[in-house]
Length: 267
Ligand SMILES: [Zn+2]
Image (tube, rainbow, N blue to C red):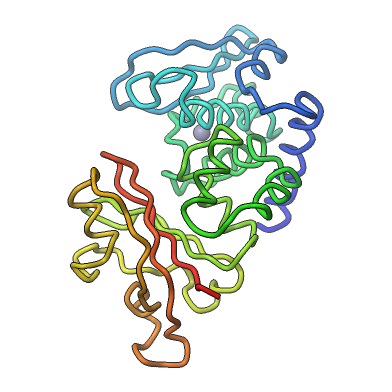
């Protein structure tokens, strides 16, 4: 999987540098440059986006009911994801040979391998590796870094947080929670062996005074970074053991969509 990921990163970086060597990446211009038409429509909860091949032409459908209009970071990510299905040879050839289009749930919501690959492409298209690393190294730690990077690259807080952890810019764990469950968890290299990204699934396992729980209860509250321990979040870390590191819990609210929790060490 690693080499496949590397290939996709390289492809996305090549496309980004070819079309937008100095500017923020514009997935709509990129669609137009490739002769791909698109529209935003109201498709209720059916999908975020969809790439269709019909009459020897590609068309992207964006679902305004889920990703709003084209200025929103989630819409940009969804379009970049659909372009992934176009640029990744196996995906495009499958559509051209008559396979049904995938009704996409983007931004790392799906575990299907084609969807993960298109998300991976979108992440590296909108946040080209060298540009992302150079900028991220100038940012302070925690939620402020995610906000700054999301603003700079026009990306959603969730896709930026995942990318930040995966790029190993600094040791960090990022998780996304709704009041019903923990949706995803990614750890940078320094923490992965300890966590395996297996955080508790059920938010009721978290302490009631955790910032994550407080903001899930009331998204209008302002988050304050606070001390915590790794075992509070990860069942495989034994309380009081040498691995039970002291961490900072820092939270970003996603409003109705839940919260992102960042854990990092103060040092
Ligand atoms: Zn897709």
